[in-house]
Amino acid sequence: MGFQYMLVWACLSQGLEGGGVPPHPPSNPPLTHQATSLASPREKNPPPEAALVAYRFLTYLLHKDWEALLDLAAFPFWLESTSHTSPKALSEAWEKQLSPKPLEDYEIRGAEVLSFQQMQERFGPPPQRLAKLPLGQKGYWFAVVNVSGKAVVLLLREFPARPPSGPVLKVVAFHD
Image (cartoon, rainbow, N blue to C red; front, top):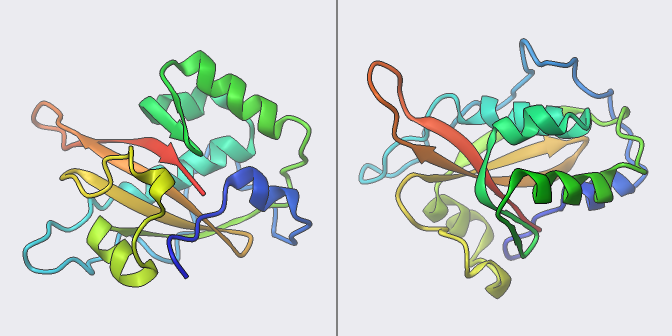
């Protein structure tokens, strides 16, 4: 099966039925799977807010709210196999891909957060085109999100924060 990821525009270009775009901004996301605790004893558990960050990112994407989406992104940002080093370049890429598409019929149904090891156990080794990404490094998590029955995968990165707040999570990649 391999690392089978769906680009959001590929997912959304199919005539999928869904329950509609979530309200903007999201207040109480319907996450069927919060950040999971599937980590082995030697792995740290994913941050509890990781699924919420993924949900918000995709909600902003479905609403084409590039400014809010960029607040949740870190750079360089990998979209497919292209690295975008600035917010402007990334928003232009999203706009080019998604502007002509109606997104109001898509629904975010759930999210699960996995480590690189868990992704490999479940889906096999990643394809070569993802070799440039920091897939197995500490502080990176995969969010697998159900968007109207199709899997969308985001790579999240933990950035250290000053106490008393915890780590800050940003989305750094969206690949197929």
